[in-house]
Amino acid sequence: ILYERFNRLRELGPECQSQATQPNQAQSAATKLGLRPQLEVFKAYDMERTEYYAVFLEVVDQFLQGQLDANTFEEAVRFMYGINAYRILTVDKVVQAIAKNIQSLVSDARSIDILELFTSLPPVHEQSPLRSHIAYRMKVEALVGADEHVFRVDYIYESQTMTIQLLRREDITLDEAVTEEERWAYYVDSYVLFEPTEGVPQLQQSRPRPYLRRHLHADECDYVISSRSNLEIKIAVNTYKLCFLTGTEDTYANHTRRAQLAGDAAAKAACDEQWGARAARWHSWLEQEHGRQQQAAAPGDQQLNEWWK
Image (cartoon, rainbow, N blue to C red; front, side):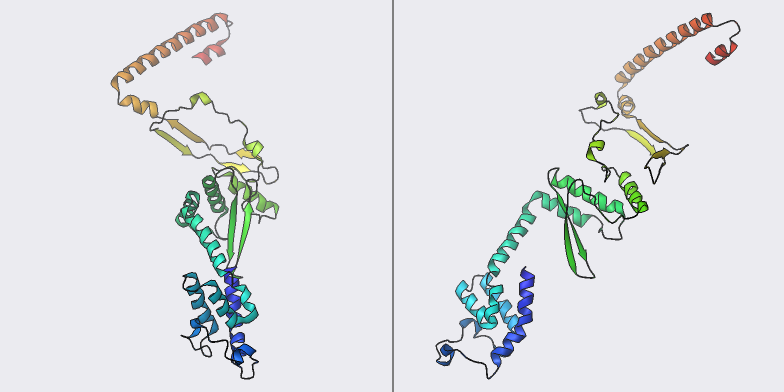
């Protein structure tokens, strides 16, 4: 709003100045009788040669700094721009609104975190991969909270325009996928991220996961783990069915307990004794079961005996 008003007065400046300096310009009765003296704010300028817009900027600056009162500012602007002065008479209120929003941006904790995220991440533009757009949005949503929506702001350099789009939780980040192949590629790029897959209803994503809650430990410790991600998946374009490739797998091992026992001899000895007792019970059960199977097996059932061996 502020830029549009200033730009309009900048365009009107030459026209208003030329009309004021024309010799046959009609003067009011107050001007002819000398009852309308030159304003104090204009005494330092040659109003016939100085560009109106340059004088206007200095007058606005003095008004915002408190050096001019509202009546003097209004009279000065009307002297230069006539009936078009209404566009800028409330400039102080517009600037106050801008300052209020800026103050909110620089003082609100979430706004500061979002700004730091914007400046720390690599720039996200139209040539960036889809994963960058989705990951950036998910990070912002984690900062604003589950009850707040986010806005996507795009600046188009060719037309020098800016667009703002409200993104709700169920909205996808980019709506540029048109063909079936593009929608499939969008789904795959979103699926491989750690964040929830876009385009999938939240009810399906909130189903119970196949993990036992009794294995979740409330205490915090330094976990020692090793993992390898070699599992490969193919996704059908038409049905979105997942197919795991043969010979590929993911492995995960938790070495925390072993690492803890390595530094505690007493605990390691107690653990070895416990595991030794369990191993003994397992071998005892195995021998008993093997004996019962041999007694129940037919004399000619050599295949079963070979299997047990």
